[in-house]
Amino acid sequence: MDLKLFFNVSLILAINAAILFAIYMLISFLRLKKRKQPFEELHQNLSVGNQVLLASGLYGKVTDIKHDVVMVEIAPKIVVKASRFAIHNIVEEK
Image (cartoon, rainbow, N blue to C red; front, side, top):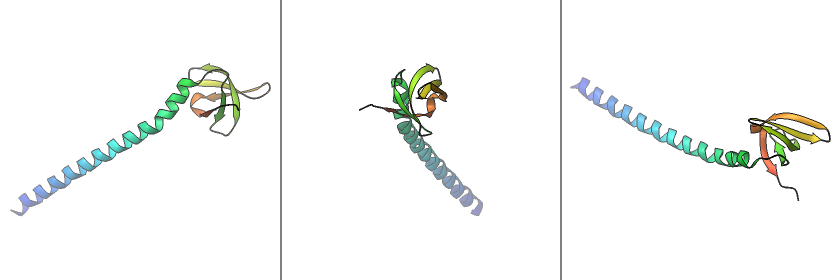
């Protein structure tokens, strides 16, 4: 009798742990999707001539885009090669 009770309690505990893990993974997935959406929109709207803010804090103008690499002019005649994913924001000139 004790062995059967132990098995039942263990089974219920395992099922509860699996359900909690599934809920945790679902919430994590939804949060990640919500965080990625603005960056996906940013990369879709990125074009040559945009003023951008890089993750390093540098401001510059996009001069060329090649797949995952962008060329950013940070000062006259000074162009740096950066990852497309290093672009933190497109800056609107006022």
